[in-house]
Each structure stands twice: as C-alpha cells, then as structure tokens.
Length: 159
Length: 328
Image 1 (cartoon, each protein chain N blue to C red):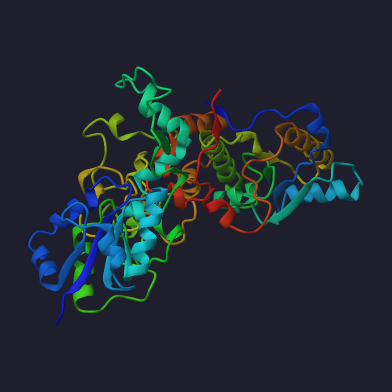
Image 2 (cartoon, rainbow over the protein chains, first blue to last red):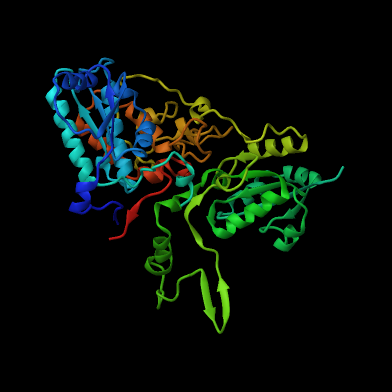
C-alpha cells in the first residue's frame, strides 16, 4: 500500500502552481512576515496568510478545512519553549500539527502537506526563505487529492 | 384506536440493533400493543411487492438500521421513505456509518480481493473467476448482483431522516423513551436526535483534576494496562488512557468508565464535532505543555492506529470520510 499521491513528472511540475495557506500568529510570526514586507524581500506569491492571535488557536478541524482548499498548509508560531505571548499556545500547536501529520499519513495523505514553523518578529529573512522552501516542497508534492475546487460539499459526499 | 404500522429494516448491519429490541424485555409487549409490524426481514415474512403496493405514507414509522454499502440499500431506503410518514435512523450505522463505515479505509476492489483471495482462511482455486461481479451471463440468461458503492454512507446522505436514535446499539433506556414518546405522540421536532446532546464527560462519574501540569508522553491501550495500576475515581484521559468521552454523546445510566474501560465513542459525535480525529488531537495535545520534540514524537508513536481509534463509529460523517491510497 502506498500513499495515494506519487511524484508528478518534471513537465507537470513546471506548470503546477501550488496554493499555500498559512495560519500566522499575531505576535511573533506575523511580525516576521510584516518585517519581510517592509524590507521588500522577495518570495513566491503562492502563499496566503491568515493572522490569528496565537498558533495555539488553530483548531485541527481548521487545518483539515484548509487542506480542502490548499495544496499545503502551515501553522507559524513563536519559538519554543518560551516565546509564546500566551506561554504555551505554541506548545499545543506543535503537538497538534505532529499528531495531525500522523493521522493524515494513516489516511493516505502526504503528511508533508501540513507543517509547523517558528518565526520571531526580527526574522524577516527566515520568513522569506521559509516561504520559498514551503513553495518548493508543495510544488514537488503535486496537487492535493483532498482539494475540492468548488464550494459544493455534495462533491465529497458520494463519489 | 388503530395500531401503528411499523417497519424495521436492515442494510449493511450486524443484526445487533434487532437484538437490542429484545433487550427491552417486557416493554416489547407495549410495542405489540400499539403497533403492527408490516415489514421486518429478520423476524417476519414480507415481500417488497407488498411494500411497493402500499400507498405513500401508509407506514407510520420505518426504523432503518445498518449503513448504506450498495445500490440495493439506496433503492430500498428510497422506497421506505416514500411509503413512510416517519423514518428513524436506528443505531449508529444508519446515523453516521458506524463500524461498517470503517470499510472506507479500503477501496472496494481491495475488499473483494481480500475476502475472496487473500484472507488466510480462503481457499479459492480460481480467484479470477470465483469473485462476485455485478453481471453474469450464461446461456442467454443474465444475472445481476447489487454493486458496492465506492464509499459507505449514512442513510441521511440519501433520504430525509426524521429522527436519529444513535448508539451501537442504542442503549435500552433510550429505546424505551423513544417507544413511550411514539405511544404518547410526544416526539420532538423533525431532525432531532432522540438522546442527549451533552458529551460523555458531562455525565461521567470520574473526577477531572483539570490540572495544567499533567504531562503524558505515552498513551496506553486498554490491553497494556496492568490491573490495579489505574485510579478508579480519576479521569482516564488524565491517567494516560485514550477515552473518547469529550467528543461522544452521553449514553445514559451505565458507562464503560464505571467498569474501567475508556469510552469507545459508540453513541456518535456531539453536535459540534465535525471531525473526531481532529478534536481528539486537540484533547490529547492539552497534555503536552513543556514537552520536548522527542517526547512529542514518542507520544505520537504510542497512538498506533489513529484512524481506527478516532473514526471508529463516524468515518463517513467526518471531514475526510475515506482513506486514499493506491496499491503498489
């Protein structure tokens, strides 16, 4: 038994533009993203960010919601172990992402489609290079089999 | 007063819901007093031609148990829906897929191959030929079998359902309450679950300390627990045993936790749970503050089958619904 998705051909890779959705914590990670913007750093346009107050606020159900619309989803939080504005939110986010990766793997979805990263407000360059890296990972993974193109839930109910 | 006409039908089912009717002991006499069974494949003779000949809405209540696995199931529930005033999804399989829903962890072709070729107890001399197929033709005669659907589904994904009686099987007090509500014409509004919306945790007799410094690096499966090792009064989750109480509807008087077994989730999901695995990941993560990455890895590895564990009774109604994979 192998995962449903297999590596796509090189020509397909050139044409495929992944969609990446990121949940970014207000205090550290969004600060880092903002700093990258202020410094006019370049990074691929494939990512969309959703600002949340804390990475610990991201319910795993939201991670699955995001995986139905994007090819790769990431949660960005403050550095472990002590940087979280709310003390332990990033601890919980880290564990949730790890456990969800295991669940996705058992469901036949590549666990690399869900990632956790840590960015501090001064790490503008690190944010830009993380976005570059995630876009490359997403391009290599290919289209997400979970992704449904239109809003109609009916499509997922019965194949 | 004329008796109610009731039907009790099964789809892909283990038969346990039919047996649960016997569990209600002498309340069955109350059922006999108020109702006539017009259709119940397990217990009484009846033909689909009789059902087809009925007027629309002639059956007062149809209780349907079992999950939808093939085309025949869909065909039959559509007929029963047309001929019934009220349809009740009886048991967890018809409510949310139940155990049968775990069939969605495999593709249909793999299920058939395992059952007719690869299972250790199978001796099939010609597996290419001796395997069920939807059509068979010989001497000009064409025979058909129902086709297995790609996914197991619950009945409300095909027909309008009036009430749900969840459980695997529904607990006796809930069945009795439902019968009394039917007898006294006191059923709630359409679409209701004939049971509590609270979670098992709300009514569990064990105590939660809710301390924020509990750290669990390894969850134990029931067979790994040494007898006497656990405290009888304290919450099982806080002692490192995965209990699905937080996401499961409460079941009534007798709880598995009272006999030292963690909740399996057989009453189905609370109304606000869209995906049981996602919610339980959150529940388990609460014990991970100040853990190192290695400890988190150990914790993850101690949960060896998250799909079978968390999705056991509601896979078709979860957010992902099906395992995706290809054979090598």
